[in-house]
Structures are given as structure tokens and as C-alpha cells.
Amino acid sequence: QVELVQSGAQMKQPGSSVQLSCKAPGNIFDRYGISWLRRAPGQPLEWMGVVVPLFDVKTFAQKFHDRITITADKSTNTAYLDMNNLNSDDTAVYYCARVKLGNSWHFDLWGRGTLVTVSS
Amino acid sequence: SYVLTQSLSMSVAPGETARISCGGSNLQSYSVYWYQHVPGQAPLLLIYYDQYRPSAIPERFSGSKSGDTATLTIDAVEVGDEADYYCQMWGPSSTALPVFGGGTHLTVL
Image: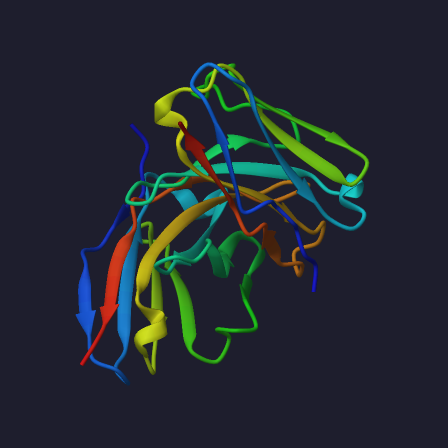
């Protein structure tokens, strides 16, 4: 069964940084992109950014553009989300999602999520 | 920035039909996608390109669009359908950003 395998839950101090990983099957970056999204408690899904190595595209939501980095390691089929300067509002479940490319991009496969808790 | 509008919540009884709407300016010009999210689980793509279902999605789920309003219809609702449902669009260029609706929580009474 095709799935995206995400790294485990993390607890972080305010002001610190976090790196999350998302391992995909096969040579995913030859045909797809990877996005990161999150869902905070009581909040809707929130898109954070996307990396599409095939088109040399990296795009971030304005809200996060100065705090996150998304990278794609083609050798290991793994995408990473790095976020710095964490605060309590960043407590959320973070999801990676495979981006189906074409005339209109969308998310056709999702990881199970990684819980990040930011607390002192 | 572009906004997709969904009602916050709705309730249906098992066996009934749920219709979840999603509106946006000139939405008729964009493809609409629908996702189901049960908190604690991975979100699931239900509908793509307005009306098409991935092979693993039951026929009870269908999508349509009329003018600037897209609708997700769930026939014969089951208790297991209780979840949050999101519509989403993505502009036509590689520099466009994806937009999600605020989500509709479906309660199955």
C-alpha cells in the first residue's frame, strides 16, 4: 500500500526549531511535489508550503515564508519541513501530502501526521 | 486573497443525504477538490476535478458544481462519515497558491 511515512511526535520549547520528515515510496519527486499542511486544535486545515523539484518550485504561504524551509532529498525520497522560532500557536498536527501535478494541482495522498507540541 | 466559503457544520441522520456546499468568486473557472478529515487520521481525497472519485472512494460520495458553488453530496450517510469536509482549489499556474475552505463538520445523529 502506498503511503507517506512521517516522523514521530515532538515536544518543543518556545523559540526553538523543529524538523519533520516525510518519506515517500519510489521516485516520488520525478512526478509529484510534496506539500506541508497543519491542523491546530479547533482550527481548520492550513496549507504551509510546497516543493516541486521537477519544476524547481518552492512556494510558501505568506504567513510562514520567513519561518519555514521545505526541502526534498531525491536520493532518499524524503521531504523535510524545518520551522524556527516556535510558539504555542504552532502546536498542531503537521501533515505532508503528495501533490498531483497537472492542469490543476491537488493533494492525492496524505501522511498520518506528526504532532508537534510547543510548551515551556 | 481568494476565499472559499463553507458552512461551519451540519447534521444528518444515518441513511439520509448530506449536501455540503463551497462557494467562491469565479469558482466555475477552477477545479474543486474535496477532502474528508477525521481528526487523528490522515485526510483523504474524496473528489477531484469537481466530480471524479478516486477508485477507493465509495459511490455514495459525489461532487458537482453549478456556477460558483461546488457541492459534495454524501448519499446514505453512515456513522463513519462523521468528519470534517474541506473543499480546495488551486490556481492554474505554478506560482498560484492552494486555498482551502474553512471546513464543514458533519455530525451523524
